[in-house]
Length: 468
Ligand SMILES: Nc1ncnc2c1ncn2[C@@H]1O[C@H](COP(=O)(O)OP(=O)(O)O)[C@@H](O)[C@H]1O
Ligand SMILES: [Mg+2]
Image 1 (cartoon, rainbow, N blue to C red):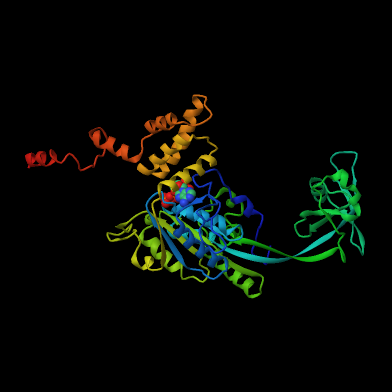
Image 2: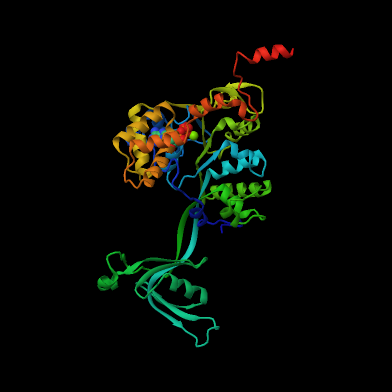
């Protein structure tokens, strides 16, 4: 708690969940200290100009220099736009918030579009909070727990702690006894107890006990017995996002909503109250703003209202850096009849630094496929990899990546250890790529519903003429 706005720093660790996914091999942008892109590094291959550009933007974000800027990753499907955004997220580290969404999510949430975007923006803005807390820090001299004979009497006990200058005995309640037991605190441990929350942290074993070394093993950390008073004030620093503060303080939701991910709409008064509290903290030097990154993928799916919201939101003093990606060329802006490059209105486009991604060369495709095989833990022969690369060139990288898993399963079925050409070609015939699927649809179009392929040009005009 800071003032009357609630905070909960521990929630943050629980809300970030990762699984093995399409981009699980990406561990950063793969840049050197001069921000040049290494050919292959941190799971990243090629696309050096775009990676370097992304790195420069990251460097500016880390220095806290830019807020309210925006960049657009534009390029064909499968050229690594999402991968680069993921690389940026990894390179930013845990302190700087990174929020990610697909533009189309906005239309499926049970809230207004502007509310959804506001939440996304606030997920990308961190507040670094300095809190003074009172702690007890010292070496445990003795723990005495009275074990009552009957089970339903509350446990009591005494804890003796010392510093180099003093020694004090504290009375223990049930809750404290439980956490001491849980942390396996023993005499000789140096511990700190947060007075407000009762949280115990073990700092290590006291040097006075260093002859215990053999019994404790090499993992034991030895520390000095603390000096001075047992009771101290300590400054703690943690980063929470504005969205997390919003949710925790929204009376209807409470912090449990953060786990469910089902936060609903947050009332404007709650946000106003939090914003003014945060600016108060900033003035008092208790908090800083940490502008993070908001990544909106498939940005052409936003409509004109969303774009105008973005335009205004980027003017805000606390705006994060906005990264958007699209694979569209000149196309209609959703919600209008106007065409625009990338389906983005000109006034928004004007704010964007545009980074183009290029199609990959054969060797780059091969290296990406190599990395994916390793990531999925699949052994593939050189010939089979060459075939996968060829497939990637002729269909798409993403399709070839999918074939790795499929071929591995086929290979498993014939109880072989290594994926061979035959497994890949079998997978290739089982699962069609887009081109073959198109071909198939054109051949059999009469058998499908809602057919709009304006094909069979020789016959249709004739039949129309006949009806006329
Ligand atoms: N330069 C790269 N280095 C490593 N993997 C990449 C690279 N570019 C793309 N990939 C991988 O290829 C697949 C398709 O790329 P993706 O980023 O989804 O393309 P886009 O978003 O441009 O359509 C993903 O699994 C991605 O992780
Ligand atoms: Mg993508």
